[in-house]
Length: 451
Image (cartoon, rainbow, N blue to C red; front, side, top):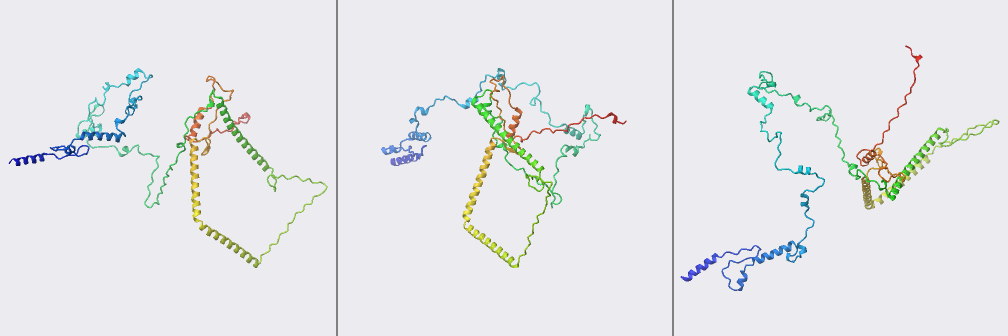
């Protein structure tokens, strides 16, 4: 019996052995075995989970940092912060010497609400949200006495004071919604013959020049326009003003020359002799008194018109047909020669198209780059946008201090010209007042008045 009992205990102990579970790291573990006989069993069933966790932590450090923390130096692990956190600095209130103490006291807000002498929405008890008109309507329906002006009881037998609902008319409801100046929309008929509806013109979406212009509203003045400028900058600005004035003088001289030529041409047209070309002057022939000059008209003999014979007409027709046949043959030969060159012609056409497209894009880019500098000196519409005038003083007029400084230019004209150059307003020219006819004053004669 003893052996049987022993076998039962051993079977029970074997059934009580828990199955091995995988460790957290992933390696199998057999820690629930009852006996460890021999070195092999000790090596197989030993608990190495702490060692595996340590190794896994080292591997995670290598994956994140690149190496273990133990191999890092102190300079790599620790940093002395001398700047501080920008977010904390922004959240702290700024110190200002200009802020008054009263402003600081007023800026401090308390969590307790202030006491108001006037009633607020929260202090007023909630009343019924029934309007006065609805209340009167309900009183009429219930035939209850209603108070009118001066607290007088209204008679319910009057017109409009009973239980019947009398509302305002439709004209009163729609009052103010009709606009007599709006255009009436004409509805099209089915066949479309009675009324014709004008198509609505869609405004094109084009880029405005002001979207491209990058000129600031107030330009930085030249260094030579100062009241006490450096010598080099002042000389440079004077030379620029001299070039502008010389260009303006050349243009005025050219216009004066054109006017002089036009005046000379008009003077010549007034002294034109009939039968002679423009500009030719006929010298006067002196006539002697003793001899009479005989005038004879030169008679030009007319060439008789000879009619072609039948043979001549046939020969001319044959020559014309041969010439036309040769021209057609040359055109056909040229066309046959161009058929073999179709590929080269196609490639040439593509190259020419690409060159034209590139030239067009280059022109657009150049115009855009030119527009970035403003519209000064360019023609926009009917008039030309004026350029900025160079305001410079000569060395004799310069004042070395602000006390004796004289103003130059006009601020209003400068701002107006700046808005024109930035395409904010259209370029215009000053409209001069028209000269009226001078009134003539005369005195009426007293002796011509008949009463």
